Image (cartoon, rainbow, N blue to C red; front, side, top):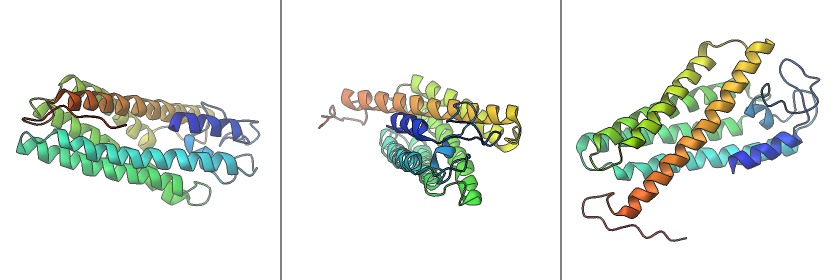
Length: 222
């Protein structure tokens, strides 16, 4: 849903980037996702349709991310360490999800400082959640260990992105803007793939009946 809604929002975006306010449309490698949520596009035009779609997309994504990390903790009750680490991961994941909702609720052109804080902490807490759940998977004897690789690889990407937005090139230059906007696209789509993969694996694990000692296969109600 996030991919579809933001893709539609890109089509409705009036245009303009930080480096080129005259750009006639959304430029995939020079506009940020957050540009979609501006009440006034970089070109100076009203951006209502794109902003509404972006707010819906990111609010759903943030809310569902928080729910995922909370639900995922149930698979790691086999040991005290696993339970503790997974619960800490759930807390970090919930905070990250809330921050993503915060990003949606604070258009950068109206609440620039708050928007920036939410962006920074959304990705930092997402990184912490991925690292903690990587450890939880390795600790839990029954859970498929290959899924730790998925989180570990994503965590490496996410760590690189946190470094990029912290000390990376300025968006005031064309090259810097392209690097930052492209990096954001890569990490957002990588996050979708990583969480979808983890959710699918968790569903299969639950259905196998191995999720808890003595557990029966989960009957999925649709």
